[in-house]
Length: 256
Length: 335
Image (cartoon, rainbow over all chains, first blue to last red; front, side, top):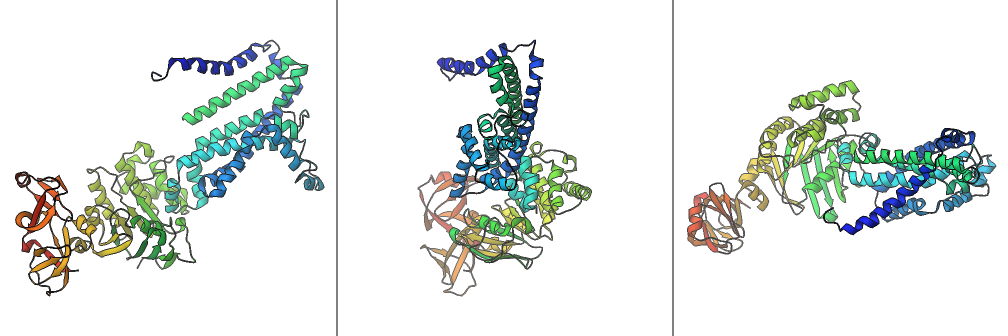
């Protein structure tokens, strides 16, 4: 602190205000007398239930698909791999709406895979499955990125030691590699869950907004904002609490 | 033979021809970059030979068409870094190789405790690696390596990271465990080589330059590295019946029954070297304390002088000195 010039306090403080002030402003607008009724209305509960359900499923899908991806990215070299890494990280910088359109052209009725699935009687677009796909699409890089970094930091010496002691690759993975990066795996999972919970653009484009089927909490909030601003504010407050809890959890894991 | 390594790694300019007998411990010594690590990597399976083969107990581990992965080789490496798994207790670490080989949980636990007990570590079984001292951690690593029951144990400078007051006791323990086991120990320490290994191979620049029983190689070194390990000066030349005509010029008187005209090597201790009016001219490179003497290093020879002598002659780096050795102190043998 002593080596820093005093004036940086001003922009730093303004930055902190920019983040905190709107949250406070929103919290101040919550109608506490109706709060419970607003967040337990039929449509709110349906959205909340759907959001938790799809986000947990997406987080699980991220772990299932992302752990092997992170392992491959961290443990194999070659020019091809850096290209693969860039491709995997695209959803991180891509506007979610664009992601939704891309998914639509893949799994939609006329899509690349969708038209074959249609023949088999499977429709993905505008279903709960589509919500999970959209959320997984945007959340996957969060898990892959944080896990790959941890795997690289951990290095391969423990894995080589384990192999030298006669452990097969699968045993090394489950008994050495994954336990060693468990904190990063947990915080990566929490982050991808949070990203899935907040997903809006790709979901509304690819899955639509059907109550109980595809209308997750962010979509519900966006819709209520027009008709019932107080309900929107109450639900936003709930999402904010979840976000704070997620940050606390991920941060505690990281510092542990 | 238990291990037979006849293999080359072209990009490292290493070409090796090593054999280790059943129950034998071989010391592998040599300067940095001589190919010791390459040899260990070829055996453990961290590196593929570009030609040749590696076999253990008659089973090919690697050649042009064969590749046995590291976990399937029954070769365990113990390095100076114990590499204990940080998420497991000391006991959990020793249980690991047993469980990996399919030993039932209870049995593995019992046997692991026996291994820990044999190293005097039973009281530390529940500790995490972070709660162990360097010496304790290395002993857990030894227990773990022994629990893996390898056909060949590779010891890569196992004492290098330990305090000098811990190393002797551990070396003695290790000596006991190596009896009857097939092992290769890479070391820079003459004590490790002498106490752990019956036979030594000296590598220089990717080739074997000297080999034989440890005491023999150290008494009659054939390479600059073995001479340095043994603490001896080594020169090469031609024996004329009274003196040795040194390869780099100069003569050295000696007593030897060898036939005049043969190429010989001569070894002598630095303590036998004295300063003289006539002798081998050398330039002083460095002066360092060596026990109660001063070790004077020149281009190729070392001399241990009394501090009084060194001071009286005003020795300093750059000073030209003439070095002489009494003929009876020079040991000569065929090159």
